[in-house]
Each structure stands twice: as structure tokens, then as C-alpha cells.
Length: 159
Image 1 (tube, helix red, strand yellow):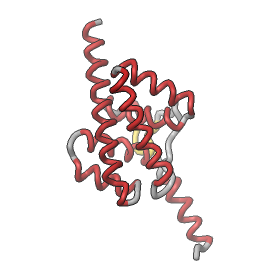
Image 2: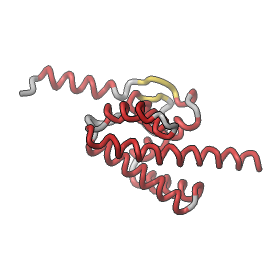
Image 3: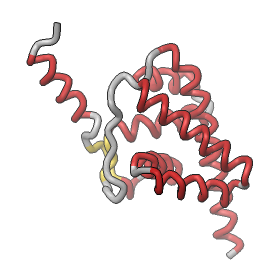
Image 4: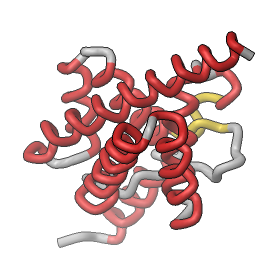
């Protein structure tokens, strides 16, 4: 049976997920991009559509759609089956929340072949039976973001 104290503890834990742990301006480009994608995803259908188009334009139709679908699937797992609600900051906020940082680290670890770390982070976010799928999707997204950044750097050098 839940007591009023349990409810207070739940609220406190939920708020801690939004606690600032960094600033966007100090992040490397991969982490910044991941958190930006998360915020855009949470901003609604129009932002999601723009994100999908941006990925297609920059990665090509097949790769862009795969990256978007992987991101969509990951967000659906985390938001519909997560251990608790994931807290994020507003699109234009310069703070990085604890949950946002955790989400970014999951993707970065998976994409950089730190599978054990990615599994541990996934276990913080989702039930154990969804861990493998969560890490696999994270790896796909992280790889796509790396391609985006490399492509962007090449375009900057050419221009």
C-alpha cells in the first residue's frame, strides 16, 4: 500500500531527473545533438517531422528514415515502458538535465562500443527485458549522429 510519504518520495525522485547537471554550451557535438533531438522529439509532431526531414536531407532517404525510425522506437520504449517518466528541459534551455544526460550517455556508449556501460544505463531507464532492444536502437542512433557530424564537418571544409 502506498503512503503519502511514498508519493512525496516519488515526486522528489521525478524532479531529480530534471536537475541541471551541465550546460549545453559545454557539451561535445555528439552529446549536444542527442539532447537536441530528444527535446525536439518531446516538442511535438511538427518538431518530429522537421527532425525526420533533416535526417533524410543529411543522411539520404534510406539512412535518414532508419535513423528516425530507430529514434522513434527508442523514445517509444523509454516513454511508454520506462521505469519512470523521463524529464527533459525546454528546447531553448541551456541547462542539461540529469535524465537528458543519461539518455545521451546511453546512446554515446552504445555507439562507441561500450556495450556493458550501455546495458547498465539502459537498466536505469527500462525494464530488463527491453534492455537489449534499447541498446541496439541506441547504437543505430549514435552511429547515424556520428555520420551527421562527419558529413557536416566535410561540408564546412568544402565551403
